[in-house]
Image (cartoon, rainbow over all chains, first blue to last red; front, side):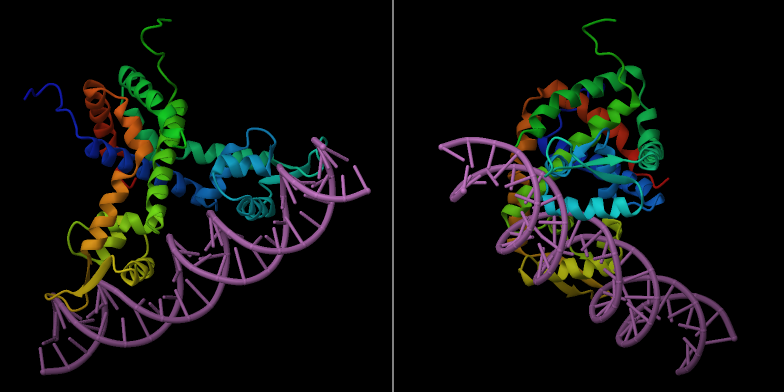
Length: 146
Length: 146
DNA sequence: TTGTTTACTTGACCCCCTCAAGTATCCGGG
DNA sequence: CCCGGATACTTGAGGGGGTCAAGTAAACAA
């Protein structure tokens, strides 16, 4: 039992820790969104809109039913954070576009995740790079469907 | 620009990566819970019940209103996964206890998070230990309220 | 042209969540 | 002892999030 190197954690411990951090970050995100009168789902949609995106693509990204997106975008549109535009190439498609205000709001939400920012600031450059590299290796396996 | 050590990631990149992994793990958890006819919230409650827990304590752990817990426990109780017991020391309090079946179901849900298990299996013991240590350092800062 | 597939919306239905109000109980000060 | 204030839980109203089934419009292929 060495003291300098942590014991190898069990998979369950790692699982639990990962879940705890994921939950904490989600709460931070939700709180920042709430500051601007948004639910976390609405903020998540706004966060995807770097460019025009068909409703269907949005549903795929969120891994949810298309009918669900209709309602979410309805509410965002009612607040003027987003607008629907007919797709010139396919008249079935409606592209969702963030308005200037929408882009502004989501930018502020990201900035206001103070808890997460603060926690990440406790890591120095080397630790950040190490963490990033480890998580980047985890990511592809996590996003597979199987 | 060295190739052997990854560049220092920006905080936004790290943020995004952390969010992606958190989301993926949450989806894996929700899918495993759904296999057993549970919503992810129901499974999360079940996961807290290592011993008897007052409704109020559960609400605090979930960071939600107490009235919310009433409904969730109602549904779990209707499925026989949980039961309410009056607290002998304080008659206002109802302790929630997982039934044998409830404990069994949540154990299986954890086992069936195959995507997450598979991804974690790609890390060797050293990497696991490093990741665990970095995340453990992040955790206290993430769970603060500020 | 006709039939199939795709994009989106609507409506029904459930769960999650909060807030406000109500009941039962505990507890501390007169 | 009793009374007022806190605490634990439940109920009901109201809204967002989620699914499924059904319907419309448009694209597409035979």
